[in-house]
Length: 122
Image (cartoon, rainbow, N blue to C red; front, top):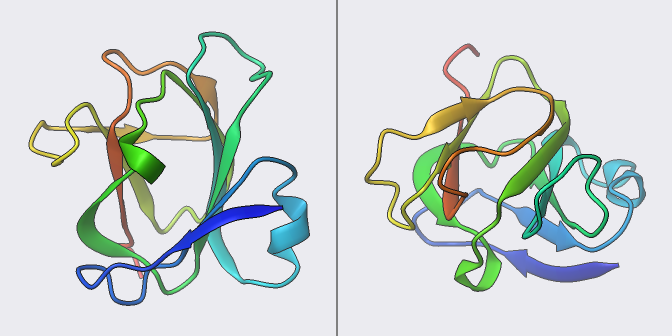
């Protein structure tokens, strides 16, 4: 189920799909850079999550706040193109240094307010 599709003028090609269930339903229809789930609760595996699928071609160096400016504590990166970076930020404007996420489930210090997707290795 798609909860929201976002496109921003700042990230003209960016398509971010927020869903509450299985990312695989979207994977078959839209080529993806990657897929991750986020939760407002601590702990892995994530029990209740919002799934974010980032469409191929949507990478940019623009700051992307989470839907409704939500703050999340746990992330599980299910799949990610190794040529791209997923950087997580504690500040909604991405003004802190950020931390690059790898695959798997973890809890970044300070929570996550926003993210950037860059593909410097293409």
